[in-house]
Length: 141
Image 1: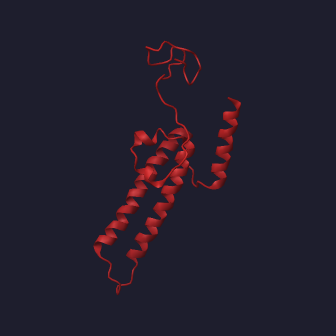
Image 2 (image 1 turned 90 degrees about the vertical axis):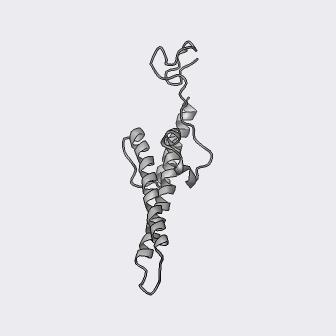
């Protein structure tokens, strides 16, 4: 088996590379074709297998949804007294905001482990430059 980190061949019966000590059976993240909001519900172990680029896209989606939930929650809380808003609607809006906040923190934590920081904004400029960098690295391999 060939180590995906150092490229040195090792005996297939062992779990770690004899040269660098990297796990031989560990899957490295690969970019996905599609990223959608529901993937934020995956467990940490599954999210940690996502490529950094995909995590940034997912973070962008979660932050957008969190902002929508926050705006909904605030508009429900600020509704005039003449408008009757049942407690179920208020608690739903608050729970959605808390859920997306927690999901956002999980994704930001994984990104902090990988990048050393969490981006304040995930905009097109960041994604385009990262995608170009990934493409350049693929071409050099």
